[in-house]
Length: 109
Length: 204
Image (tube, rainbow over all chains, first blue to last red; front, side, top):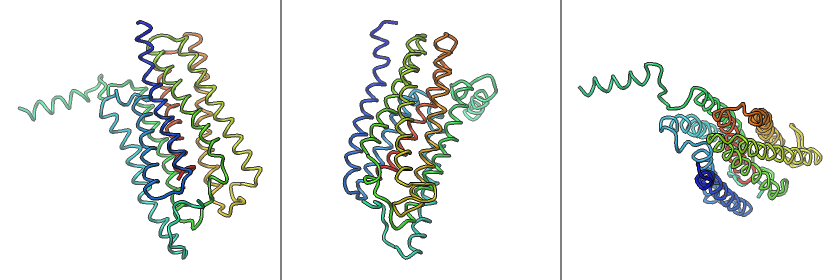
């Protein structure tokens, strides 16, 4: 295998690395500003983008059979999503029951 | 006819001796482990989400953590993931010496991350943070921090130990490319979890 082919075989990992860094820096910058609901959604989208890049390229899910990708995606993301969206309303109920009805997503910011 | 051929192809995929997922048994088992371990972290983060939503106030992370330092930790882990991916690529090409050096770089990245995490823990403990109390008015904040980052840190430490064995075996030309790949899957999973912790705990 030629050196050029080897180098191009590794290059995709470092391109992904660079994209991950850019997205991380962007998220850091946004995270230091006052949080709004839109900003939270943007941060969550950035998080999922990074997860997709790591899963797709570093873990080679892009090159595996779709059934394996479905098992991983459903096994983790869908289940975690269901877990969170079943639990989160209870948190809001507890907050309302304690008499602090205003949702304070941003915490102390 | 189409029903018969459909049943036949379904049977032939599961009759044994073939791999319906087109991966080895070891790799499939590693993926199943990753899924189950991912659900452990999902449970922890869902619990953290509950605690956040149920609390009328939550400490301002920007006042407690140096987000630049957390960004450095993220940079270290992402870079270690890239070096690990390169090691896997080299191992697949049969270049075990190259794989060894990149696994070594990955180990250094893991140790760097753990050092940063230890420093962060020491700083917070020095400021009075404990599992059951902290100076910022919300006891569950420090509990969530120590449990989530501690659980993740233990995974990083385990990964460093596993990679040390892989590096040793690569040095002695006794590791298979699949062995490096399986260790790589675990390491990328550890990085993946940090992506979620970094966003959900430190930024949001």
